Image 1 (cartoon, rainbow, N blue to C red):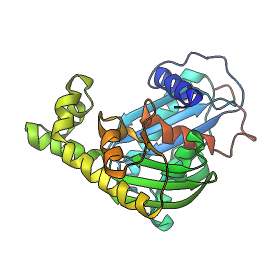
Image 2: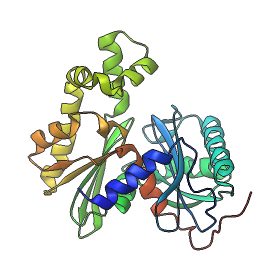
Image 3: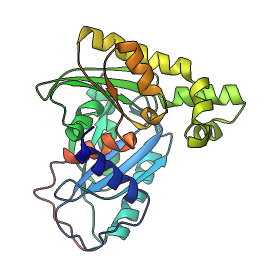
Image 4: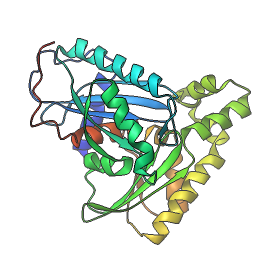
Length: 282
């Protein structure tokens, strides 16, 4: 595992949904937005690509890569933006964002419009596994982004993404299985699913869904052989999922710490607004 990657993700974990430690930073920033099926994430990086601040919140505003609550998405992102501006002491006016691979661009343009509606110029727009690799920095391998609604796969050769795919099955499916097995409302099941004290119990309940994710990954890497698989996205944090993927593919599989933050940080790294945008005191 890359120590630098781990350090960045641990820094993100410390600042997300907390007051930032560096109040006096006034240099250029890179900003990333991930409008996920389960969680919306907004992250601010400094000019060296280190996390300054961030917000994430559970919100069902996107389904399978398509914005289904346009006004709600704008309001949520605008609120996150205002909170971070208050904490950091300067305005945020640009960001890069993502979409699941395989979704036609004509259908995901609403994602860019959400940023515009929230007061952010969209300065980057790429598929989730590709931007995840902007942080992972793989030369060769597979990036698997298990999000709320889908599992996205990107095959990387010589540092370039040469193949992408996306299939239904993600965190929402895991939560639905937990809700059914434990007779819980969906939102309560979502909380139980991520409770580390119940990880062993939950792993047993959702094992068939883990196998479904594993079968999706196995099918795509069989056609595009790789020697390593990197799991990202919030659902990848489920204990045992990487082991199932390894067992079903026969390929070494790794999950970095706090995998939910990989894609939004990668999006921020692709933010083309860095050179022109200076932090301005609010």
